[in-house]
Image (cartoon, rainbow, N blue to C red; front, side, top):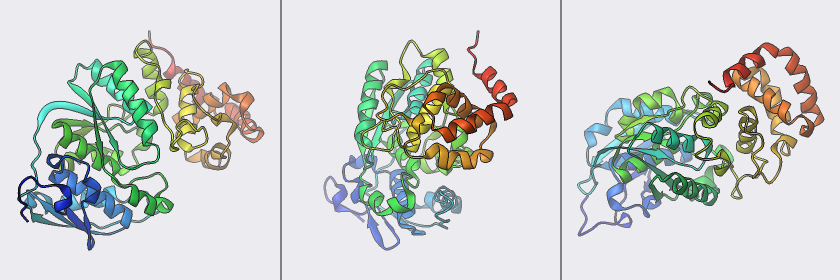
Length: 369
């Protein structure tokens, strides 16, 4: 395929998922950002949404993407959530002379969402003296405006350059929301590929936590092999921590730089709704880590307005690891007077039954001298 003059994304298709062309979603990206890596990542994300096992990729380097190990890695990433099923991806790569090649410089870029984890990753990178910048992507998600406002405030406060990109997956999200809820298949692969291409970074920080390792594009395998898809090394500074651990590190090292209440973690457009699962996890981590309440919640998550604690977490209590159980119990102790009666009764029994686990966790969270 060839194009005349300076091509635009409306002039060509970057690939096919099944028999449907892909490319329109990238129309707001500069043409030189639409590298092989970004094209494949977009096709993978849309294949996940549409449950299509076949990708045809127009690219600059077909031999690279015909490696069966690449298709295997994409299939692994698209096997989440497990209730949706597994896609055995086939990739047919076709040479496209108009496809831009990625340029690489020695710098790090942090995928920034305005949340606790990615903001802590920026602070960690600054501590290490890295040449670092933040990158935020609007991919058509409902809470994009709240994220962007937080990212802009955070990066301005700590003096980190911010790059922004947009890729419109709104149609796919709307069509697949019943199946996936807030999950976007291969989201981190796509966002990391865009960030690497946009900034020419040779290292991308995709912040995943220990209790998120079941998510394929926050897993040890992704951090080990993700460079094959993205063209840059991929890592998380907190892969062996949970959100409480991250907030404890924040309290020890960055409390005088930035308060974590500046961040936002919410699945609703309003931000800090207090009713969604993300807000509930945030409230627990704040309390367990010694930060108290996040003052920005519109509804107190500890009143359990959506039944997340009573109807989801408590029935699955035995499946949680010791640290998560202890963090919940520390948070329940902090907010005991606000808990629904059923949750408060459970907490009182669990404090006695899990005293040893709770004591060990408290010691691990104590300030270091």
